[in-house]
Image 1 (cartoon, helix red, strand yellow):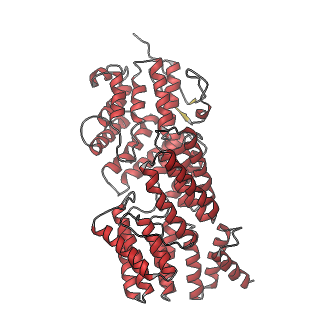
Image 2: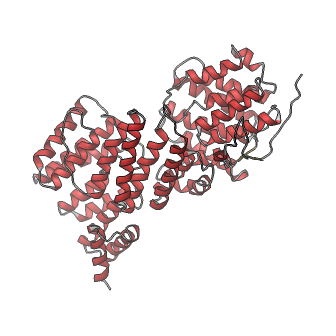
Image 3: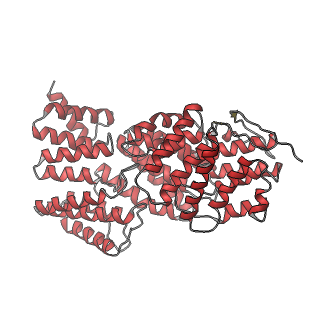
Length: 525
């Protein structure tokens, strides 16, 4: 009988040679303590795989788990780890066959597989993923997995790996249950914080703290974890990107830009034809948003060029194709370089919003009305228009935004206010922002601008302040708040906001808003 050897104890992960040159890009992936029954050689690959898995480096993790399997074909947890590398727990399921195939290589039946797990702890972990990849809908299976991990956590309360995977199972379970109460996120975050306190370089703990507290109210709790995770796993694109979820919640635009540039570089270095382009597209999407907030419009255009190249290289993967109109519309709205696109039945809602706003701002109200009508058709059809996450609701918001702009242009103040109030009622049904502005013109910010046009600066102040609570340090909302305070005669308050704007857009002398801020500040000296 094979002897049980417990290895690791805060094992520092280093580069290994696997049938060829060392994979140096895997050197830095954090530290974990995960004793198993494996031989030491297989264990080293397993530890690296788990650490990379904690950072959602799916492709890299699979390579390491398969290396462990090649060394020790009956090492049950190597197949457990590979199965979790197909999970993508915070998204809807897209691939249940690959993890089932991975488990089948360990044994034809669940009983055969469990028989190869020599300890109660390893059997418990394997049983949990058997539920994850068993019968039922993906939502039912994820909840069953979460319940299994809860039982393991009760059985092994001092085991940081079980605690970390339990925390992730709750984040996944919240999505499976469509539970927006944040109760599971708060529980997961508390457990992950405990692990991070005991092991300050644990990749999963830092990562899942960020996911748990990824909303405007709780983001400050995750800021220390974001700094930690920013220095873990430099070759894993998701690990480079994820801290920017918290940096964006603090309006730390330099870090949003550089973090996503790093994530994009890591994704491109790993990508091969046939791979998903999701990591690269997600990071360039957020990178563009960060650069637009910094006022780096030249770099913002570079991100669009990169996306177009990805579309060509990937032969039109849907994720990339759907993101292009979003980024083009965002560029128009953020730069206020107004552009009117042709309106067809295929026009993206993002494009319709940018076109409607551009048309009103350039005096082409007829085209804005056409954009409103096109959005109305999407709403009537119950379409999400290709807008990801809460798409139908966001299309409804965009429809009311363009409608309010049209009514403002026609001098119908009451109609404009009514539509924007209705838009905010819909926004209240959607999870608070945890990324780039959605829609590309935030509803509270647009409402504030409309109220300024209607000569209601006091009401506008409230809308801009709410916008900045939801998206701190956002320059267009800062500018709007400064203008509203100035119109009210609150020069001290206006000066404070213009100072913030001056700091964000430092060196961008061509901006009308920045010139306006500097003129106001100079007038007070």
